Image (cartoon, rainbow, N blue to C red; front, top):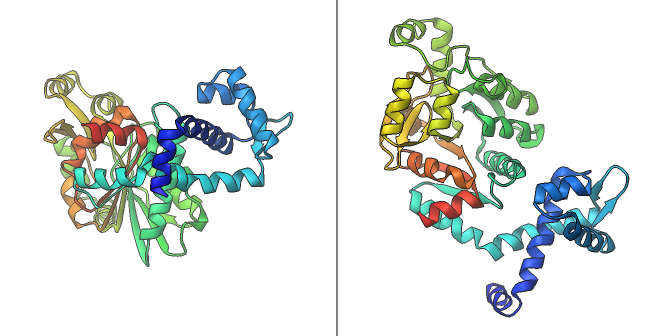
Length: 340
């Protein structure tokens, strides 16, 4: 198969370009259906004239249908799209990229989805689906799943369904989050995950960052201590990786700390730790919840982050991440990481 693909790349490169274009159109229709031609053209970055000819071809092949609501995939279109997934991965060398990325980063596994989150918000849906599929393979028996906040984890929560597993699940926030946007707080996300999987969750109403005095006082509270014990006995952690300055601004960080982060060229953030490009910790927010050292005792760690712009953040954190980490990322970030 690979030799045939290599021959095709050399003798019929235009064929592969057309295949990739039509595959991309089918994927977007599958995500957005029913979708109008104008919305689809905007999402794909195509002109309506270019898209019209492709849409007409796909309709002739009975792969899509169009009515006054918009375009949708036919059963044949859905089946063909599923068949194309494996072929497109092979054409792009995704399996090889995953192995190379795994070895480069020194982690357990890398999973790459097509596209770039910076260019299309639909790619975040693919990251979420890949995270759900990864979780399904790892869940076994009684599972305590610690979850951080952020928009990526919120997307993962929306992707989970009761079909995820028949195992027993308990979702817990990995750390406090009062002060953040409510939808992106770890408490909200763990609640949505439990609702979507028909399982249980615990709340953890403490601030995202506290002073040493408040920290010392809060961790003595029996309820907080009980949730902390649950978090640290988690069998799985789901977390995102943030851009350092973006995360600092979201936390309304003081000008002094912002200056420190900028001077130390911080590029990545996870669990309240800020990292420079070498992976050194340049600043730590005092948070109540999961700490970096706690990860070594947790069997399954899934990090989800994508987009070319996140490559530096991903690389910086991975220099501190446990070797058991599974990274779920997209093609944009992966290619930049492998170039680095």
